[in-house]
Length: 304
Image (cartoon, rainbow, N blue to C red; front, side, top):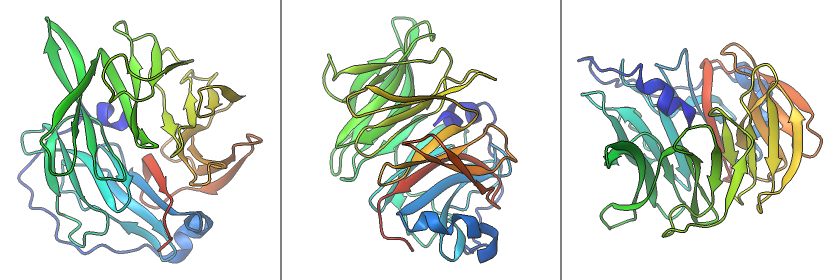
């Protein structure tokens, strides 16, 4: 989700017409090394030539299928998927970050879906509930609110923290990566959508914002974001560290069976990798033809 914040400074808009191109798959041999990933579920990536030209793609047996067609200057900043729905953030015509929801298999790839609010980071649950962050002022200081919209109900404010860097639904609850007011300490708040005091929190071993991904059952993989001494942490559902590895790889997505991690290096031209969670061993699986991968999500669904 870090792309949402990074891309806001680069966002913009123009009067270019919206794309009406039909989605197309890349040649099968261009993603041949990734075919095995589709057997475990449905792999979605946010990808583009740079972080100002990103769209959502799906790795399929037929190749790389484009799921969104963004007009020039209006990239998808970040996304979240659950069931057959995606929530994603993009800049509107005034460059304001906008949260929208639509069906994952909507044939109109240029459609922006249904607007649910304005914010920087979004997460969607299997029942269609959408949560997003929204920066606001309170007592003269900038803080981050979490707003939630359930099906058929108006959006409500759930909670407020000094700063939020990520949101993720896990086992029906909303979790959040929260920074302290100083921005130098980070926690993973489980059940952040519950009234204060929220569920238990897990202190994260990072002093600058780094990548963090949660599995469907609440396991975490995150990096310390220390270059060149980055460390990759893996913890269980209770927040106990189960592996700590010095690694140049950053976590991008848990496999549906939680035995593997999709990982990548902080280099647009570097290949993706597949990490064995039990051993920490990484197998390189090559780059994607769409370009730089900003984020990913691996759904537990039948492959296409």
